[in-house]
Structures are given as structure tokens and as C-alpha cells.
Image (cartoon, rainbow, N blue to C red; front, side):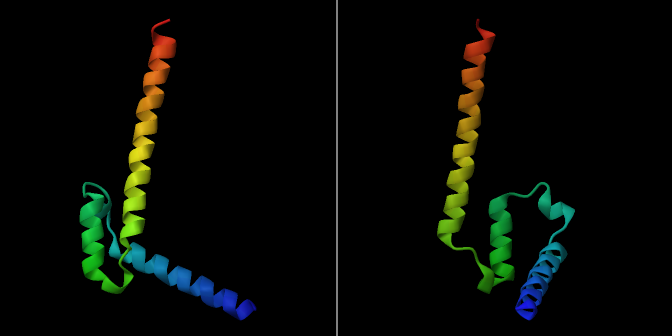
Length: 82
């Protein structure tokens, strides 16, 4: 049982090392997520994210932005115009 746990931890550590080695500050700042996804797909075709995951992430982020805007409007109307 402990041997399998060590194997899983080693696989996670290796995946983290690969992710850190493949990224740099220039990639993380100033580049769009779409461009990064395209670069990742070209670099590792066997590790491509499926379209449901990509669209789920886009929808979730869009709903998050919408929730922030609605909250700001609600707070402005409730407290700024008293």
C-alpha cells in the first residue's frame, strides 16, 4: 500500500516539474489563455484537454465575471444612492 502511494506522489512530483519547466514568467504574464492552450496542445498532443473542460472553464469564468458585475451594481444602488 505504501509503495503505491509513493508511486503516485512521484508521478505528481514529476508532472509538477514538467509543468514548471515548460512555463516561464513571459508565458504566464501577457499571453492569453487561448494562446497558451494552443501551445500546450501542439507541445503535448497526448495531454490535450477535452472540449468540455475548456468550455466549462470558459462558462465558469464568464459567470464569475457576471456575478461580480451584478454584485457591484447591487452595492452601488443599495449604498451609494441612499
